[in-house]
Image (cartoon, rainbow, N blue to C red):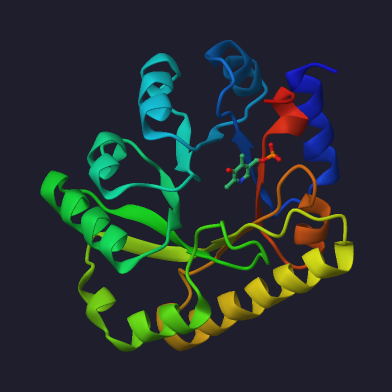
Length: 218
Ligand SMILES: *Cc1c(COP(=O)(O)O)cnc(C)c1O
């Protein structure tokens, strides 16, 4: 199946309210343009340098989602054009995002990446750490950051019950944060990739990040 057929298939299977981010990291712009020609406008990348290079080659309407771990000294590279940062996982990174967005005079949509997997290596806030950060109230002075929701990566396992439990936990946290801190505009629950997006959608996810199903193995 071609890239456009894969995207068609996903469109047919995803509920209307779920946003598809096509994860194009490591794949060439030619394949991304094939996706673009079907009407796909959201692309996910993990590395700032690669995102910058592709952004220069893609149509200006493309929406760039930073989904990989972001170093503070790379924020500046992507800030002029990035559409949404899914991987905000520390106060120091949020400081850097706020400062750079303020410096160039824009507002940027940000998701808080939450650690939900059992593996140690994954990035993301631990819940207690996040609640300490929120209690501090410093985030209320981030006038150039739109807190739009949360992102999580489930464990890399065949145990669908475990994956489901992790996604349900993320959804509950999302709802609590929306209710207690951020309000209505906090509306994005980014969870699910090639191997687990159906579980994520069943658990209430409304943004999926799908790479290898669309573009092939990396
Ligand atoms: C690479 C990546 C994806 C896409 O993974 P696939 O298994 O190829 O669909 C989704 N989310 C994040 C954070 C990623 O790094």
